[in-house]
Structure formats: C-alpha cells, structure tokens
Image (cartoon, rainbow, N blue to C red; front, side):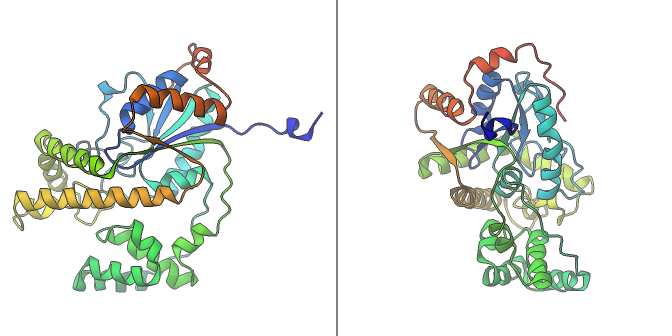
Length: 335
C-alpha cells in the first residue's frame, strides 16, 4: 500500500470570489443547489445587522432554501476582523463537511477569504495605545488621506488594499510596522501558502467597462430601494461615524450628505467612484492569489456552468452525482 493512501483526505472547500456586482449571488445559488453546498458569506460587511441594502445582502426569500452563514451576526457598533472570520470558518467548515454538505465560501473580501484558504497567522503584536492615539490625532488634524499617505510610503501593498477612510485598519497596519519593524503585507507574503483544505477557487471576471456599468446600475437601484434611509437609521440608532461598519461602501459616502455637508448628486457620484476603485482593488488582490480558475461572466451562463462542473470534477474529484448523494442530508441552520 502506498503511503499517500494512508493520509486522510483534506476536507473540500469551494470558493467563489470576484469584484462587487460581478454576479456571485446568482451563480453561487446555482452551484449550491447542484452540489448540496452551504454558503459562508465572505463579505466583511454582511456580518452586520441592519446593513442590508448597501451590502447587497441576500434576502431570506431569495436563498432558495440554501443555508447561508455569517450574515447578520454582529451589531454594527462592534468591530469584526479577518481574524474573527478565520476563527468562525475554522468551526463552520468542519461542521458543514460533517453533515455531508459542501462548504462554500462566497464573497469579495480578499484578505478574509485568503486567510481561511491558506491558514494565515495574524500578527500577535501587542498594541501601543499611545502610538494609536498619536496616529488618530494626526488623522483628525490632517485628514484620513494624509494618514493613508504615511502608510503608502511605508507599506504600499497594504495601502493599496485599504481605503483611506478605513482609519482603524490603516492605524493597525502602521502600528504593526512600528512594533515589529515588519510591514503587514510582508508578514502575509512571508507565510507559507499551504491550504488545510482541498481547494477549488473560482474567480469571476468580465470586461472592465461592463463591470463599471453594472456597478453604477446597482448603486442607482440601491438608492431607489432606500439606501439613504438605511444609513440614516444606523446613525439615529447610535452607530458612530468611525465604527468599522460605517466604513463600508454606501455608508461613509452618504453620511456627509445626510448631515447637510454635500448634496445628493455629489454623494452618489462619490459612491460610484469609490465602488469602481474598490472593484479595481479587489481584482488586483485576487490576481495575486494562486490557483484561481477564472470565469468570464461575459460568456454564456450555461457554458460557464458546464466549465465549472468540469473544474470541480478535476479539483475536488466529484461531479454532479455528488449532489444526488447529498439529497437525504439535513441542510442545517444558517447563522
């Protein structure tokens, strides 16, 4: 008997990632039904309750019976981090696999997803409250862009993936450098990228101009659906401007308008611009990840499905018959 046959197979993990508005939700439901999967949201903002429109959160009636996890699990006043996501997935993935279902991460937050796929060890550097206060005072006096420029000079890679308004994470990246002498991006790059799972990574892409048109149409639809009212409710409930949740796209851009500091047209144009830039940063992050099978969403949907079925058969070793074997399995509860 060969030694390899004595080694237990790693649990399978399907991942669907891509920029905002690329079509992840529709495709994820199709694949989840076909393979008996349970979806784990890989979106850093969908964890927050009351933040539905701006995060394009799937509605309960739209899930088509597919269990979804890590949605509506955190109060928007509380922070949520990549380390929190990693810890939750380390529990959820074996639980889902233990039910005979396929664990399926769907989302666009690159660091969150990559940290789970490759078991990143996050910096354990202790905090320096005095240094944090110094950086916060600098941001308050000079603006978040000036603080972000300091990070860009010291750690361009981290600066590229962090929005200037994400002051908390910009401060943490500078704090890690201050305490350890090593950049956050350097720490991540230096880790061995070996997955504890049998990975199948699917990445969505499309013509850039078409992606930007879809982003703008989505934002117009969000505004019609009541995004401004959603942001106003959060502010009225006591969620502070500097909360991690309020740094999400669709929230930070509308606050100045709601407070009379700009007009509606300016706020919407700013949101569209920031979302286009965010999508560009997402694609840049994903392009540096390994082993992604790219799917062009400009192609025929059913042709893409056929290609994905072939990819899953090769990567994970099962085809559509896998779903038939799971038909008697209990779907579990979303959380």
